[in-house]
Image (cartoon, rainbow over all chains, first blue to last red; front, top):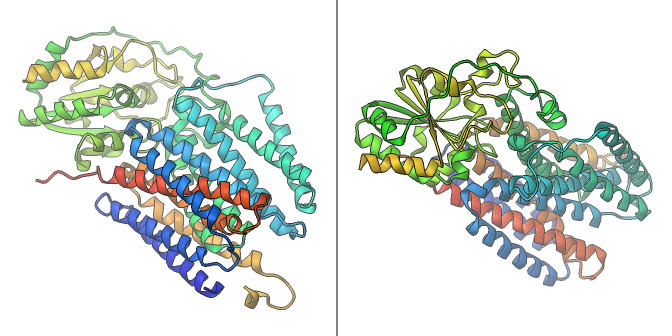
Length: 451
Length: 103
């Protein structure tokens, strides 16, 4: 097959990638969209195999088999609660693959432009790889989720950035000298680690979106390095997608990207919010009587629901409430969970219909007509201090206004504050009742009361 | 790509940059329309797409030399295939769970 045929097939693949992403715009067509996208990938890979410069298929075949087995195994085994970790790992693998392709593309007589794009694919790929590994460590709690800060961190980072620029320059003018290559790889790995360690667990939705974007940009840079259009098109689609998700996550936290990346929460969490009122606990039995009388219930899940694996019992409770003539909706905050859309996937897994999953802007106007708002394992995303307390570190962040509902039930393990370490005045409000204990057990008790 | 070598200057960088810019703008338009319910599958699906590096890796893994370049290509093939196969499969698994209640 000639270069012309191969490139024409790439055009077809690009069209299918685009149509596939377009179909991802609605839950009804999304599955088909993913199929189109995978078909595009298949076409691109198969026509590339016909490239005349491929002389041996042995290593390709072994590599594809090993990769497919690992990928299929991971995709089948992963729990929906573990999706953020899996996506972090996959981001990292994509980055490392682009680094290797960039490395393999080095030729002693590469032009400065080519050498520069090779350098970029190594840099972005390396940063994506180690950054994703640190994110994976934090998400899987193999390392502390707290922001890791030390004095002089900014100076150290500035020195690394300067060294990266210098190594990029040296490599581009002298691609045949391997010393610059090894220095560039080492620096990119170091840079990835340094970039993610100061970021706290609650900011993971931002980081994982950003690393997703980087994995696309790395593929894009590798596309420049090997002058291949399909890598550039597919890579930049992924890059754009990650950037948009990053923006949405930042907006939902009312923080700039720079603030998330560089400051953690540590500098602001010292301020004390004075909270008036007292905590009013309620037993599951008493909560049942309130729920039995309710005609409209809103459920607001957070990361705690994922930790307690409570999504299935939540769905059971929803069915019982509905049989009782009650309208049930879910209010999902954009940053609830550890990655964008995390709660939606968990609830979809429990068979909750997606038209009951309302976005923050849809549920907030209805809140005044809600009899009972049930908060399950969410904290900062329902904190009214974001509206009311100017000195609060999360002041200005858009939140779900559960306190406007007639009654609020908060399912919570203990009185420890959320990830951000911020007091939550919601717990002290007149209409709030606290249901202490494991969310799954508490809901189980409620369900038994209904039966 | 020879036909693009107008005159003496090599226009490949310009041509590739054109593709990049157009694809980025197209990507922004497409992704902005994805509802937040689908953000996790979008991300894992995008992840699978970023495995397109596989296409770049194949030529190196298949150079038949058994040298450093072919081993780098081999490693990239393994990693990118994990992304492609794992990414598409897990996305499909998730999307199959998104159902609408029959009224």
